[in-house]
Image 1 (tube, rainbow, N blue to C red):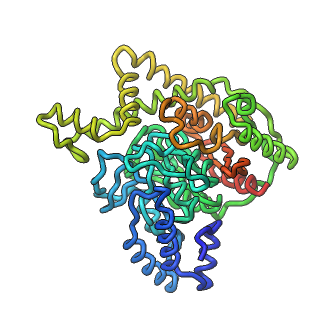
Image 2 (spheres, rainbow, N blue to C red):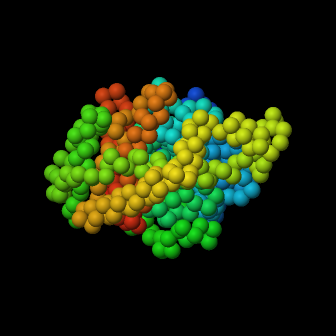
Image 3 (cartoon, rainbow, N blue to C red):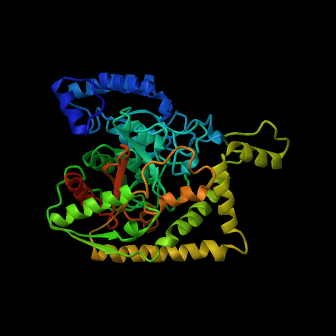
Length: 475
């Protein structure tokens, strides 16, 4: 039995016809996980629980009482809390920590009879673009195991890419759902900031973090968004807007659209030629189908990555202060007093990239540098947001590559972390502006590596984004 179903609708038809059962489906995913253990996509697999739950859901399907996700097997990123299950953010400092409550999104997925099959490997505390910064080792790309899957939700992406689950849930701070989706040939959606609750998500940068699905189809992304989105009393940053029926309202975009693309994506020597070729191909397809597609210059493009990393690291240094060896998590056995408890526990518990970002964030928030860096970055963020909003008043969508090149080789960014930071050049705009964005599969390189293109649109216009994405994939 194949586990590479292109959409959840296929699984539901197979279940309804009796050709498969949820129990059989879970067994096939568990077999795939065992066969692909070398990819290191999962930090932990909930095998017994998934099998037990599958039998219960089979009975609910027979009784006609099953939820909307009955038969959908999902992996969750290892920074999403699930009650009575370990959650580590792929860090030594939380290696043996068990969550005492479930995140809002986990509760909503389980309420609709989804099966959570395991927690997926990620960059430590979601900090990275390659999934090499994990206490549990790097994740490998299923298309080419010598290459990265992207990050920080690399394990979540590879789990879907290799057929180890049907869909997965990641978090996106500066592109951490969209970039791995691009590297793995999948659909990766970052909703509007404030659309999905962050309650129970281990924080990296609170003003940027957002939960998003990684799927094989736009239909599945729409369904998962619909179920996870909406008001939550535990998250005061959430918008109180009603949640549309994204899946039922999904239809190919009818009217002709105005689309802008970043001319820097085609003129920059830092963008891979095959990525440029994919972008040109889709621009020509859109124009041939009657859409208006114009080049635009984004004058703040050079400031996007520095602005993002100043703000994200500043927030990270504050959020990660709670891991001190006193309250919970790892405590150094070599500590002898309060000061050495702090210093040794954090030095031994955090990985290199996390320590780098904490130190950078502490620096930009320190006296004498706050105004020069952090306060200025907040002003630039406002300019980026206003410019993005003005472009989206004129255009329906902004089209860019998701990443400047396809999946790169393992170890490439180890010597120079700035190289890794620059992989976020096209994804952080949506994060800083708080607008929704989606990465869509857009062919492959001559070596068979997946390519992805990204679409951005107005805040809370996910329905229009999903509709156009469905049409885009049919071009």
